Length: 279
Ligand code: HH2
Image 1 (cartoon, rainbow, N blue to C red):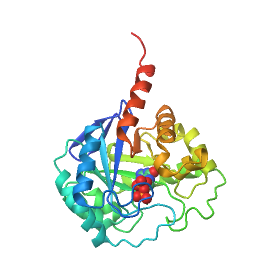
Image 2: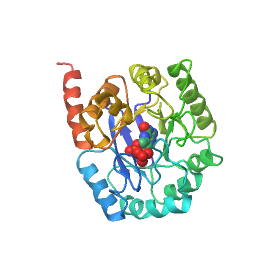
Image 3: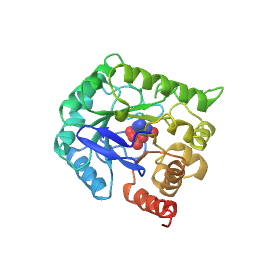
Image 4: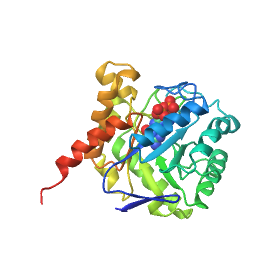
């Protein structure tokens, strides 16, 4: 397992799970759409998440929620992203940009982003090249279908084996394009073309992904699977999100993508204390 995650100018130690705080600069994200669409609100929120202990920030300017149509073009995505990214380029933590578009990747990387979080795993033509020539990290996520249709009929013979094979293939493609292992993260893509049972099976078997030797990112925060388990709307899923994050951490997750950084940090302190062996 690589011991450091190389993220632009940053070297992040992987001796504890890292917290990636979500900043959605969108009108329509499933849990906080519209709250941080104004640059000033997004910047303030980003700073707040750093103060709460985020290790990485993830800026997203296009929602990938189930049923979302791909209506945001690259110009609009960049119009939302750039004022926030520019303000954060000297932040104390790496800034990741959540995008599937090579054009957005290229501009974001030239404006100071240290990581690309691609729910499409750099499969768009030109995406590999956009990241390869830089020192940025990348998160490769598995998704069955597209956000518009992915939750209609998710189907797998063996979800863990299929998602693992996909991520292995994408890691190979990314390495072949010149991106070294230290800059790669992988993500089974909870909720992206998966039923509740698929998501639970992947969470149970998260260690099968950790053996691929790069940090595994887990994104359960506020997701609809937690709504199915608790009967609660997105705004009332904090406790369930913390539970899922903690299980992911215990099952080997290297990065937890969350909306609620302070609460996640507290939960991880308890886990760290229990796991620390007395001398
Ligand atoms: N989930 C969302 C977006 N991006 N990226 C990775 N790597 N893993 C995830 O699980 C993941 C992701 C969805 O959450 P959110 O950003 O809050 O919502 P929306 O896509 O509606 O903006």
